[in-house]
Length: 316
Image (cartoon, rainbow, N blue to C red; front, side):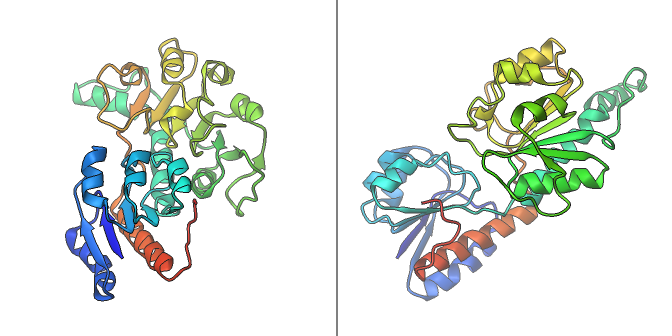
């Protein structure tokens, strides 16, 4: 098989080569390219590939349809909304993701945002650098807060586990009935109840028709005035303009945003780059040294399984 990696997996070259060596030793061809989002460049690089590997780079239907030998798209990411799944299904191409690689890293960033917002870390750091004091910026503790988890998959449950270690009550909403692991979630509730009762809401859900625009003007208006919204899921789950208005008008207390409608770099005029009590990061929740190493292991194990006729982490 010809296997084409169309963007970096975020690991050192020697690690990538070590992962690929068993494949090349078995007679397969492995080629790695730097990221290029131009569909014509992608077709030129992967036009005769049996397997395409990507991370979070968009893979459009025109690319999938042009790769006539393509059998498998191996996505080194948890979400797959950047892949044209309809085209893959039409062409009979199998798709797997790298579920599980960022369970810890995403949950830790969500927790870090919660703590930073509650304790006014960005503001007091600025004060300290300017030779000033904390006056007027005494924060609150995470302990005793009700944290609402929207999307109770592995990342959501792990976020709940970390919050419970800080003494929080954790409630959750999941689109489909879910059995939570012990020590992660105290109670499942409907979305309206979660929105009204939570001191902190952490979005950990996939992007699909039921979650796109879920936190719009109306839902944000249901939140407590003292509540914080964390989005480490997908940008379009939240209406950015509605959230910016709520923050600017003091209708909610703060937000931690790692994901946006498009991948960074963002337009410097994006509304959430200019709101108070807001921490923004350029889609980094998934990215730690540990998670990148685990991701490489998962996707190459997934490729080995596919070659052996036993697809894992199945999307299609």
